[in-house]
Image (cartoon, rainbow, N blue to C red; front, side, top):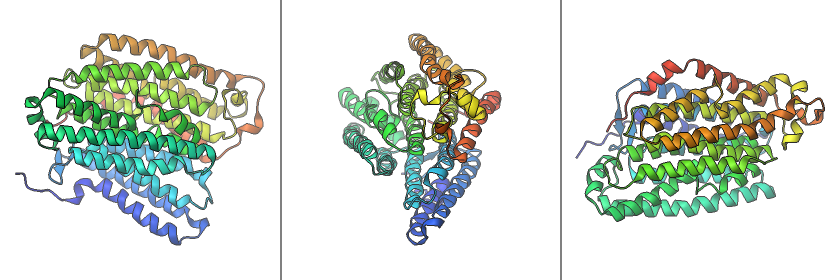
Length: 472
């Protein structure tokens, strides 16, 4: 039996975020309303310090913590940095809409707890820790979805909770079946035991487990909550729900197929490939004629899941899978949050037609919107362009040429609904009254757009850092 490693420094980013959430909860109970911003400042400091700690840990050797239930490897390190950076952008996005809100402190605490659960998802190497992380990432998010306490927010929270509870139970059932089949919950032990176990048990357990993870990712067929939850939430929450939890869940799914399921005889690559194809196609088709911009972005994020699943379908069949997934995640995080930041910067423009004349009134914000939307398509020199090149190359190299062709067709098709949003902005007729909003959101939009271009230009050194193979 391996010696138990309980060094908290191995999970320093997670520890700092947890401590910040607890301290913020206590501060929020005592601080007056006009000083609740201090809880947000503490959250920002914890995320920034967490990024620094994650970068230091990523430069060190691969290690495990707490009896090998949590692993610190290249996937964990990159996921930590992307998750915390995305959370920082969301916190900055929330400053304007939440100013002087009586529940401002609660919002920052809930964001940190949901992020903490996402971080644990990214590094979990034990099915029991995966289940605990799933709950920690989900329960605060349900509350965030209904944070406004209006009818739309209540409906969003209810649909999100019902789907999460249902698929959470299914996931726990899958973990139980895999425990019965492999007689263990640790990934390295399951990798040894599952190939010799009953194929039927492993298949049932895997499908049930993947169903729960798909809920956090927002992929087909566990995607039904996404449009209503995004449309009914506040814009900062919508940006968070469609970005941050996906990172941890995709890292968790990657680790599942790379370690415990790697040597089994079940056709998990075909399963993931079919889910990827369905997600990118159905997401695009549903987004074509959406008028509400938040609902359009919700369906857009479902289609993006399809591209993000492509490198997971070819794990072990190519050397490009890991860096393709992680780089695409980084690019997607910047461009998706940047697009939501534009929506937050013009809160009274809810439909595509409301953006008429935006280029004339707010040219810088319009430029950010164009960069982010065309970035989601995969237009050079944005980061998503290089991410899609890597993803398509990985899928083709891994033997899924048909999936690569389908993804290329969907990429071209997605240009239609993004251009439908961009076209009215250059109209001479304007809705000037709709173009007022928080300046911080404008700053986030411009910063995210600039960072997306910078990451695309500096892609080569970043890709080299992400190419370190996952430990078996």
